[in-house]
Length: 214
Ligand code: AMP
Image (tube, rainbow, N blue to C red):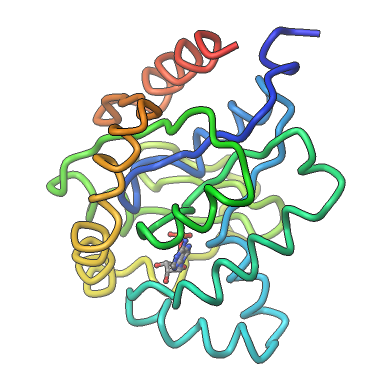
């Protein structure tokens, strides 16, 4: 077993929308064996299932606003009771507020927060060109990471991946989420990576960090 597979505790992937968290998450899952817990994916599944929670969350998501903490914390509490979460998970897109981080502290042992840093100037282009494969959850970009031609026709664009909503999401990030970097820094848990590079270059940096944690 590779050492990181024996690492106990949870990891957090942190960064602005479009930083590449979802893209890099797969690598960390492969390296550590920890399941990815993406609140964005969980909320999109609830929207698709048309549950009452999903319908409430959709209003916030479409507006580029954060879904209320109580909803998110409830989702996470439930997810962490599942058997595959017992040795820790990889949180992706969570926590996004200090209150969420405080709640998480009470229910999980976070051993590192990997922050992927990307300047605002690069975010809009990354998000507007992003496409998702609804069959596999794969994430592509029309220029930076084109999908294989045989699947291009089935790709979708997230409803919140448009320029107007991205600006609201960035504003929410700076106001409510970015302060978490200092919060985790004070706890000596923050490791920063320069995400303003190619996917492969960022992956190499992520791999070095994860191997260093084992
Ligand atoms: P993401 O897929 O991580 O970009 O999340 C998409 C949208 O889901 C966000 O813009 C928020 O509206 C909502 N969301 C996802 N995770 C959270 C969270 N931890 N706290 C609040 N809202 C969230």
